[in-house]
Length: 307
Image 1 (cartoon, rainbow, N blue to C red):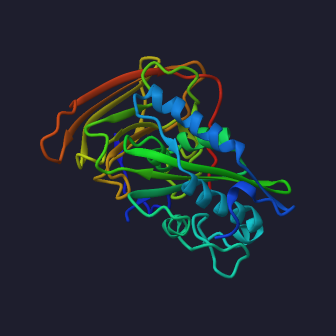
Image 2 (cartoon, rainbow, N blue to C red; image 1 turned 30 degrees about the horizontal axis):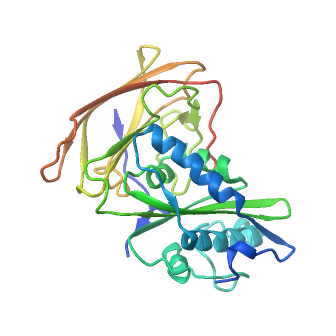
């Protein structure tokens, strides 16, 4: 088991513009609002499997997501020429500017309260974007948090360019001692790998990218859980495999989550079993100290490719 220090987080929950999305189409940039329901439904299908409460659609978060999605596709060449600029940040001198930060864009759309976050996938429609986000580390943390309650999604298209944006609201006082395991126990056709393409980039495994598909335990923020990993075992078809472990003590951006990924992609049609022994630095909570579950891998490699 190896532990690594984390990197600066661009996909996070933070405390705390243009025309209305519903009718926006200037002949160049088109926002595809049908994807809103599809994205929420796809995310809820995974949340239900994980035993989490469903998210509901917020028109205000949808508005903020649509404005930023349009900004991304209109400025795709500028982002490519300026790799130091995060896809979550808008530059005031680029066309279509609403506000610099995700929380500010949600303020402009009239959504002010709670913990708010944004996840982005360029080049993907609604459902593929959700599947890509769930195949990562930091993007998954926002989407599969037990506290996440509301979302707003939009996909914008400009010529051959498209971008999907989801804004999320999490209630830090909700969800109690809930937690999610992902992939869920006994899930089938799990992707084999993770290509590491997210911002920030997770620590590189010993054999380089791709790694195996990430495994996660994501806790509710309501109980101020700080999980500490004591030991882990990851087996593929009964054989132990080397893997990376990320937790709050070695990744400043994992507040209430633990992630594991193997040094190499899972083999096709493999059976994966994992055991994680945990302690908790927090108040009086009733959470299991050992978690064990398994799932079956399919034939496909990674689905993840967010910015």
